[in-house]
Image (cartoon, rainbow, N blue to C red; front, top):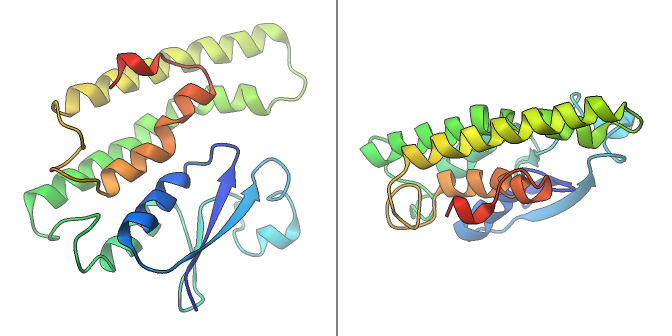
Length: 186
């Protein structure tokens, strides 16, 4: 059986894992899940009780959730080091550091924006406050990330790695939410 990645739309962070699978070059399948409608039922809850994406159904039929856990699963299978580095290298340490930052503080900065997006009927003042707070938080996290990286095409080394794909999945939210000007953060 080929592994199956359940990825979320609209704008799920799991698209970064799709990029990692593509770069890895090993067979896999995709299953698209609408995060606003298709995850909120008992059938999906039987796969992931938190009713979130991403979800990986491994080639052995096990269910694995959470971006970092799925990235680690991919890294362990990256024998040709297409998306990772030797596990004991400084580059691997740096890759994990950047992935952790993106998966925690960087991703969390978008929480107020997602909350505003998902509210069906909220007071306009509340929505405006959430959006303003979220945009400031996102800009601050972008600034922190820019300070952590050097002037290179990739986050670590001279090629696309799991650090880049983790960022790919989340960074596109800035445009989705009109949070920051992408040109300010090359």
